[in-house]
Length: 316
Ligand code: G3H
Ligand code: 13P
Ligand code: ZN
Image (cartoon, rainbow, N blue to C red; front, side):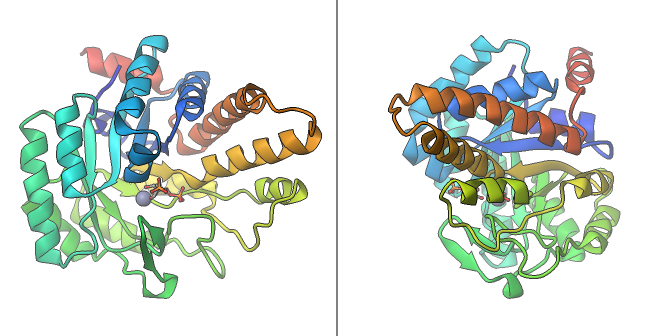
């Protein structure tokens, strides 16, 4: 059942965070649904502009509609990740997205508000909710590189004004994370002090943490042992999700870790079976490995075993 992120956030606020997972294809979609049912979790499917061009947006939408039929117990939102204005309007018209992210965080404050408000007006007219972003993460973000040192954390005072004037339903905040597999050059630096200030200024308002992959070192070691050459990769400590959830984070974005599962499975499969060439062999292993990864992640997020509570809340 497709629901808005707003509904999911109402159930989760202050208690746990919902996993928002990027998918690009059928195998990821099947693994994602399986994993969330294994852990009995509500979840968010997020689709980037890159995913929409890689698989063709119509095919991806078709896959998600079918998954809704194949897995009738699942409760999830379908969300655009880092949308520009045109992508958001296209998604609003598509009839399948329940939520869009307008990312105008690279624009000056006033322009970010103006763009976000235009998307909010169009989305709300159709019952769709909007995530916006204020501040800048480090790392690589849809073709734009922001150096870690120059990353701009969200200003807690601006956050309140931004939310009030733009009318957005949730806010992505920059608190020290970055996209990709190379998040921290030194030790992890999540700015919980900034997060606490934002929550103080916006009590009860759902906050979103991007760039939240953990980049597990054992995963990197397995990839490298099977021929990979990934050096210096580092991510967010997953035990910190619970602390973030108490401070108002209701959505945690994870993409890179899923890519690492894909890479590990395929490298190990072909290393161990050099004679094989049927794509379904590694595809089956990947779908189950991805499902198990989602289940484990949801336990850290606290969304595991919350599916029935959300179902009850929706029926009231
Ligand atoms: O924040 C970016 C997401 O990880 C999506 O990545 O644009 O390569 O699909 P992508
Ligand atoms: P990661 O690169 O840490 O998985 O972050 C994904 C993300 O924020 C998608 O919007
Ligand atoms: Zn992101």
